[in-house]
Amino acid sequence: MKSYSPTLLTLLALAVPAAAAAPDAARLDHRAVLTLTPAERGILLEEMHAFLAGVQKLTDALGRQDYPAAAQAARVLGPGMAHAVPAAMRAKLPLEFRQLGASTHADFAQIAMDAESLGDASHSLGQLASTLQKCVACHTTYQVRPAPVAGRR
Image 1 (tube, rainbow, N blue to C red):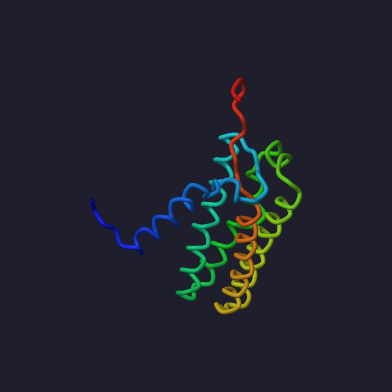
Image 2 (image 1 turned 90 degrees about the vertical axis):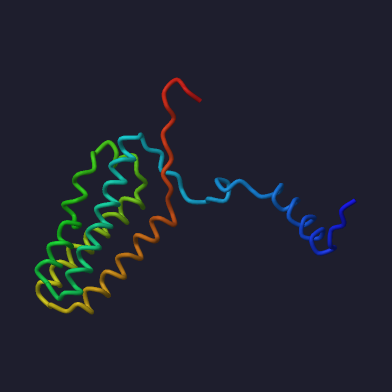
């Protein structure tokens, strides 16, 4: 008969019940659910990717002190970008989500104007940091789930 150390037995005794009682990760996610069709989810993901790509271009331009390029990168993320979201999809989204999105787009328009007029990377980066807090708030508040497929449960 093989002998196990008391430490190993204690660890096993603690680990097995803990693993068996581990709560389902989905139940721990208390974010509000946005139920979207696959096409709508794709639109939302494209917009988030555009934000990420735009922030990369913006920070690159600011690092080079290329303020016209910084302004252009920020301008693309401004309010005009929001018009690409279909009205039917927009109507499904909670008011708070839409307000946060509109505020984020407006922030990028302001970053563009200030980058052009002030030419101050520190100022623009401060604005970007504040705007990114809205991105964090959104991702902390909302999750996207697929809409049920017709005929399936």
